[in-house]
Image (cartoon, rainbow, N blue to C red):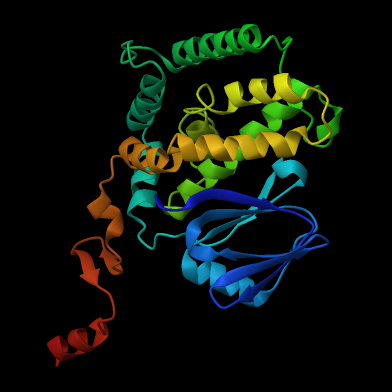
Length: 300
């Protein structure tokens, strides 16, 4: 994933396949997107995609996420780039035990407070500490860009109803969620098994994206709001700025490394593409062997 462009958002376009590229056509013309260079396609309203195009996307390991207007919601995603279930198994094991779940949550908070020791803090104390940090980031960016800030307002059913800064924040956060979603599902983890957030099919996406908001989506949103104000295309301009920031900050590479670190899985663990059969007494057994034949021979 590290050699790919982070994401490409498309809407009101027809997608087909030509050789090893996705042919994207709209009323402005046609462009060709090589599937090997993009990590994820964010498919917005009005996208018409052919079976052959999806076949190519799946074979190339490009992520595909169907999203709402301005990328505000994620509705579905395609296959995982990684065929190993090691990351998913590790995640399920960690989230299913109270002690390990708290330990992972602390590890994620520790990444945001590298100079503080959070090993003895409760989840309530960690949430309070994080809330104070985020409010401070909003105040600092407001002062830095001279963009007025009062509170976060977000209506998922009406993007245009928000103030310029809130629209920019929504677009920036959704771009970050999209990239986080892409990395999580591409490596074979579950978007729904969160350690801090819970009860939602994107719980872990919110956990993971929160690691990077203060560095990426919040400052970018304030910069765009300061520069473009009431521009009707503020959502589009924010997404483009986020894409540039992702590339310049090498965020995709960081996310892959961070995700494996959070779940305690090595590169070797997730690179093995092997199917085994589980046995409660004998452990893992080779897949593809007709074991009933051996059982019959033993009893003969």
